[in-house]
Length: 104
Image 1 (cartoon, rainbow, N blue to C red):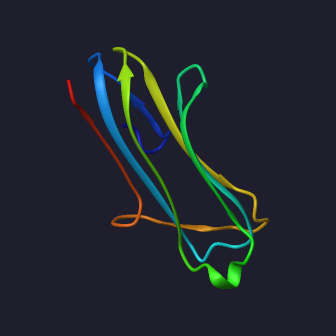
Image 2: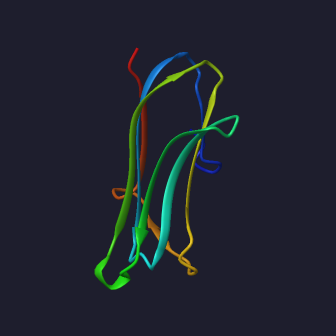
């Protein structure tokens, strides 16, 4: 996995379990999304959340958990975006993560 580009390259064909979590701090009104795509840009999984009462929301967490059948050499790309109109802080370390392992 390359954290700089958000891309993982599958080295061995098989079924992989993927857990992804992104946590925004003090989310403002808007739509937040977390998307996993393959190298061709096809959406494999996504999570989305609308915030319409920012005063009632402190932290916002988006999560994807899935089993994917992957080919050797296939790439997976992860990205998150929001349209609140202001910059948003994403928590790192314990609050946001990417975990992937081969099942078989």
